[in-house]
Image (cartoon, rainbow, N blue to C red; front, side, top):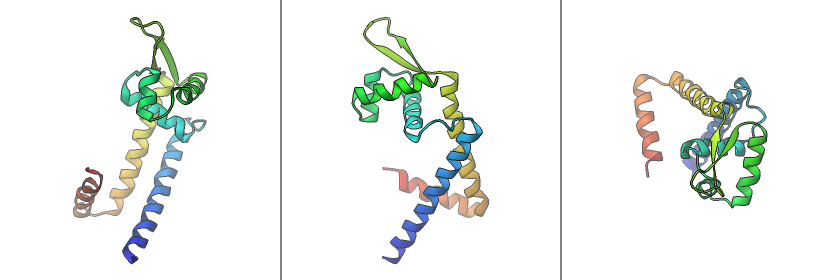
Length: 140
């Protein structure tokens, strides 16, 4: 029980630290007007590589109407644009604008800051062990 309580406390502190670093990165890249949900949409859209609305909805495990509302807001904010499909005029593919692509630069920057913060606190041997342990945790 004691180790579980300590681990929960550490995970909570780490989670808050990551959140703050991501917020700082958002501010530095002038992306403060994005919600976490919108960031998640943009990241998923990027990882799928110009999906249709249906493909995005499936990937996010959400309904098409829910995704449409969110995408319309992102189009309004100039993070996303639609391109009509040549094969099927009823379908369109979603693309990130240059502004939308900044989200990935910002996220990479935030991850780099987090990694640097962690590495500064550890010896070389601890760094190697930490990476091994994290890989063990995240591998299925």
